[in-house]
Length: 567
Ligand code: GLC
Ligand code: CA
Image 1 (tube, rainbow, N blue to C red):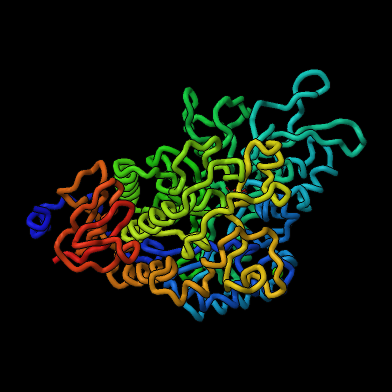
Image 2 (tube, protein in one colour):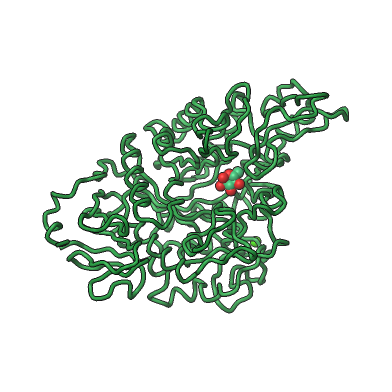
């Protein structure tokens, strides 16, 4: 039955046609490097730029288009570098600007672009501009670069409004004025060490334009823009009773949050786009914007704004076929309307890794906020099976893909990390109620028997690696044809040779949509069995499956996926 439907591909209704334009970023595979946990070459237990350069050849085996580096700028590291003290520098912990040059040059030799992280919403409280603002006093031009307000109530004792920090607690901190009196309050949507810039100030615009040009001149391929939905705040800073992260909740649609998605934001990106377009080499802007629904998110990627935006709706999809189908279809349709590629992502440095997420079978008290030893532990066998299936399906989708370092090794989160190691400000600001994100930031395992699993030649690692990671070390997986690493290599190679990133999408008919996700991209069908019974594969050549043994006698087993070249 299945194959008879298929033989006439004209009966398939296209959800998404192949794009006419073929710029590299329409179909790119971008690999996120979290520098402090990638590879430590100088032996201090913290990854460094030289460590990245040394392994670019290894990464090139994955057939990626670009790497995106999380922040490596001078920073007190209160939020793992997302608290930037100098935007045009390399923190000595990670190396020097010469090391950065060498990294870009080596990446170029492998045909890999280097995208850097730009953090424009806030800086570190140690930034010279913030220090100058503290010293200058209320009403000064220096203070106008940040969001200082007088407090409310008697003697300004209470914060200017009720906004809450993403990391817990109030979004305002009161300072002591230079003359020693209790003073104004400053806004920080994140940690108190991360004061928000005032994007109504032309001086802030000028500052960031210089930073953009600085890195563009050094040859970067573009920028991932941190919290790209927060820069402008609604005038008057009205109270907000909704969620601190701006996602919709009952009575509080995210679209009304006064600190997110304000219309003025788009002019900033239009001006940045012009700067990028004035450089050669097709440089890109990618938004980290947690904006719902998708039809609003696409405003960030209109033709004169950014090139890509992360698709967090996809990242958060549950293990439920209709939900995945819905997010794929609504994403493609929405991004097609503005002529931008849809991107897909399953893991990053802010969420529990997907090999752990998909292994959660019990109710979690704090979903998405880290897993600790007192929580029910994920089932890794189930998790890795589903993670491999979900990845293979994702790599079959048209558009751009983001990978997070270590997912190609099938790494789970560290779900039993002792609390004394936790560094995420979320953990400390909530007094442990939220564990935070350290579990997905653990240094990578390179070799099975070396101290710190080869992450550092000196055997140091800033976070301990969990039990069992030696079996997942890259060195072990390179030699094993059935490893997760080799699944990624095969799938990425096929993705390129079959041109799937530039492809189209139609749903494949004949399967139960409650349990099977099946689509056709060009001449390739991708199927994921999210139900509990084996399902037959369409006629054709099986070119990839999520694990050796996923297909038996022409049937795809539950929790697996496969690609078939249709005959
Ligand atoms: C983004 C980053 C996250 C950081 C936050 C504040 O969400 O991905 O790691 O803590 O912004 O900069
Ligand atoms: Ca180091």
